[in-house]
Length: 183
Image (cartoon, rainbow, N blue to C red; front, top):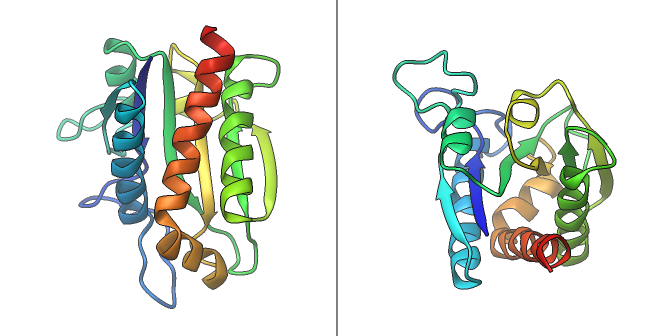
């Protein structure tokens, strides 16, 4: 299976959300988790492409376009990795899919279940988000994983102390999906 990983945001132009207490940046967490997920998926026999870029629609001439890259490769599935942020109080993991009832929802549920089981985070569930470009414009089943709330200190500890467990869980979710979809 060909997996396109998109660690969210960009380490030079847009860091994404930042923990106000520690300075932990979403782009750095996403890059670290993405690298680990890539390794685990390759060990499992998947072919993996990784692009960390905030250029979602091709509007930036200096960054690769995530959606165009995924569609051109072509990937079997697309996984975008992010950290949520809200008010410093919210906690948990949620996985976003374009719509319920299709392959994206199945992939989202596999990943969501694995993360919640692995690190015991609050289960915020799978949610529909047809407005997100990376879910709407990709040609393959696509999900966006909000691993935890980076602006909540307890969740931020999960992101830094259980990085490997989160990455392994995402990889297991992908291989669970592969077994369901391609068997």
